[in-house]
Image 1: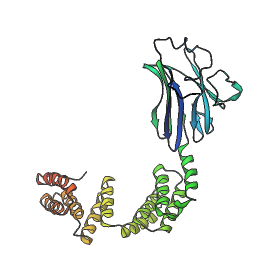
Image 2: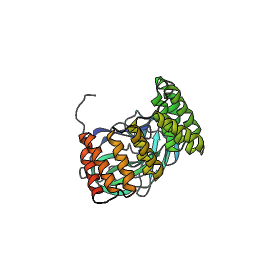
Image 3: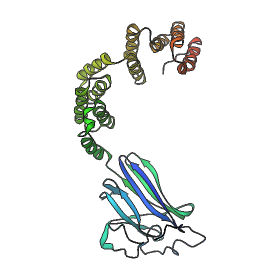
Image 4: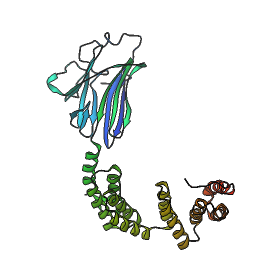
Length: 328
């Protein structure tokens, strides 16, 4: 076939859900003042869900469609519309022209969904809506109708399997890869024992503030508090002054004020020439109601800080001069 403009132009849309890619390839017929539903697209008959050759949908991993399992792969996407309910068909045959040779024996899955009224779409459109970490709604929208079906994935299982594969390649030789894997698992509260294994692997590659702190976080989640405290102490011994300051700010956000202030003070003793340690001391004095001392420390911080920080620090100093606490 010659490559010429088509009345129903081809289109493609993709969406990643977790680490799973969903891609729809289709052609976009126009309404052009025609009766679509129950007219151009008859009720009760298999429809190609687009124009020209098969509309296709590809999943890079196994998924659930409306809660029903479907293996990874490329499928021909067909639909059977009625006034009240639609059947969505995923066919193992994805290379035919339209639905003219559709064979139900080639179905991989059928699901039923309810259509709904929608804003006018002259061109048939596919879209992804209601995106969540583990699911999305695929929408066919044409004329004044929308037809949704839900695609969901088992993100945690897929990511864990993917991590095992990735950590067998060159990634296994960097501390960061193991630490990223451990951080993901503890953040998602998934397989904390595996997360701890990954953190220890990271430390074996290179013992750093970041992976010791990750280990401490995992041990805390496992309710192994004494071991968590040891890992945290080790992390702080490896940290640079800014990492120490940032950790203290994190403790403040977690309402662990006394611990944060102790770290601010110790950091200032060890690194008096760093501008941010004066910000830490200012926060300590501010919490104690010693606003004049706090303002002096903030002034010292401004004198040494990079230009990009000066305006923010000046705002904090102004608050201190009017006796306002600068702590959260």
